[in-house]
Image (cartoon, rainbow, N blue to C red; front, side, top):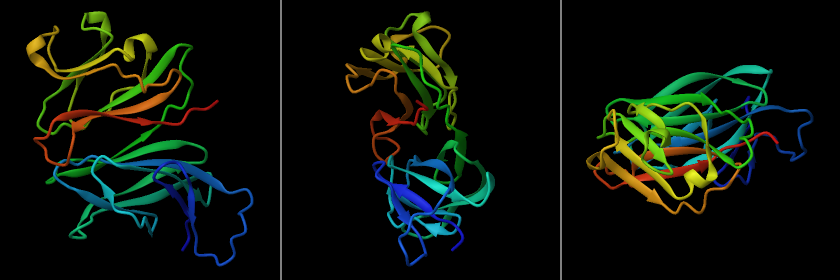
Amino acid sequence: MKKLIIISLLFSFVVLSCKKEPDPEPEVIRAFVYLYHFVPGIESVIWTVDGVQIPENMDYAEYIAGGVILDASTEEIEFVVKHSASGEILASQLLQLVEGKSYTVIIAGTVDEPVLLFNEIDTSMPLSGRIKFQFFHAAVIQDSIDIYMGGTTPDKRVVTDLGFNKLSDPFQVNDYDARPDITVTKHSEEYNQENVLLNSQYNATLVTGANYLTVVAPFTSDTSSELTLWMFALPLEY
């Protein structure tokens, strides 16, 4: 087994290794990955990273965080995602990882056309009193969306015309705008109450100075279930 992968469900890292001795590896080179499952219609998947199968099935809207040990400062690593029930390969891709960098890898799309979305995480610190966000649109039955924070006037629109299966650019918002109100609407030139898809108020769990991947997606793998905002903390360089 050439690779080691450090995996975790809640950032408590566990090392998978073929070595018999548990001695720590000196000067290891690693990149960090955050794996997500957001294919509505598929209850759970199995991930394999460079030939190492992660033993836990990943249910819809779950994630795994961890590190991949590299042989060089830059290396192509194969990511494979299978349907946990049938074993069918849903997506497979070689992705180039760079030492010390962090990436999101999302199995997304539809049951008929699942895809892997790969993105380097912006780990720079937000400004004082601000929160950093990156939104992902995984609501398969919705067209493009707009997102407002702290109100619904034009100056409160933080994301415009985000298409299905697309990631927004990272952006920063004052914490006093993000905490009281986040509104997701169908895309339109101007705000219209009739276009509101989701309104999340009193978001007290948000942390000032944090970095979030925020996913607009059904609450369950049933594509017709209620739309939900899923928020996942991402790393920052301190």
